Length: 539
Figure 1 (cartoon, rainbow, N blue to C red):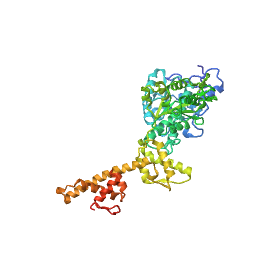
Figure 2: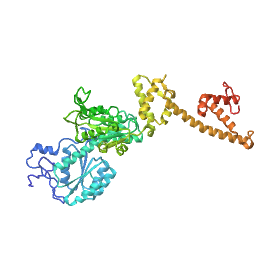
Figure 3: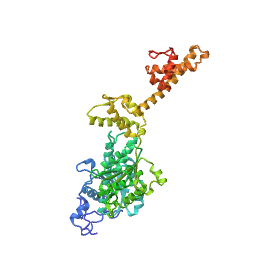
Figure 4: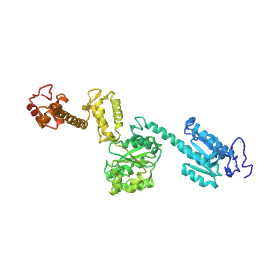
């Protein structure tokens, strides 16, 4: 290369003026290819900023160049600055360590052979203390082995000296994309930590936090996602959240109920139909896979799809083409596919009821939604969320009694979030005032409360009987050796239960597990009439 091509100035790198280094590394930056005009060279240096948003310093890519060769540092600095990055330099390991302590670094361009320490040791420190920092090592041919070791430690990429402007620009572009992705993911995670979460998702339990972290990543990809969970856990809400917070949020979101229609109707919904394809096909129709162009298709309960349609769906996913029922011309498919199931698809694969190849094609990313009983701490927040929605629709202001919230938090909710929402809707419909009581909730919750009270009462009765036996033993109680007869224990249990229930004999009979006729007969034997008040154990 002639001096006229590799002219170096103190002003840094300009179009057609790339520095050359004669140190141990050889030439650092190759010259711009001959025949390029100034516009092409300026484009190579890159004038488009790599920051996520113009004018926001927090989002500008922060680059630190660590190399003991000043011309190399200046070249990297000028090229990165031309791409809109904020660039600092360090010529040794101690200088780099000081800078890393006092500023954020998104991209570290690191030479492995440095004065004052090893580049590999510095790399280890950076990945330990600043794991979010992207590290790209710069090395000569003689030290490619060190570059491989650096990649093992945690470097994202490496540049072999001498490298061209295009190579460094590509590295900067990749680092900018990683930075944008990181900022978007962090912003989304912060949003997900609010009570309303992403879309209609609610909860701050560890199980939901884990789900939010995964959602914040898969929302920006185009891979198929399999959403698994029991009925009523909110699989459709998760699918809508992925769509809403992804790049195709403004495109269609189409739901296909694979288990709610006959096979021919499902096939028509998925792939479309041409007029006359079958009896009743009075017009041509575009299927969901083609209609949701650039959007998202949500296959609800994919496990219900017949095997022959599974094969057709697999072919569409592989070829990214959709052929309507009765048609010969295929249409391009650009929609992202999300699927859900409340069944054990892996077991269905083993049983031959679900295609293994389709399972793996859809199961690129798997999300398992926790049942409500596994995140009881979210139940009060969910209940308040649904109540606020219903209050907004009705214009009323209501709240739960303490006992109602406590019972809802202890109930197992076999129907999960859907059952909880329905229970609150029922309570709002039946309530006669602003306070929602247990009596407003569905029968299954009242039965649960009754059984819980029965278990508690049984434990209390056992304790009371034991106390009575001990007390009778100490006082003699007219019994030989302090022994209490079975009939006396029965009498004390019946009268003690009625007393604790403030005279509610019907509830006492339920808790004791006897009929009301038996209870009244026993009371008559004890000489207690139906209207007797203030019954005592010694009555």
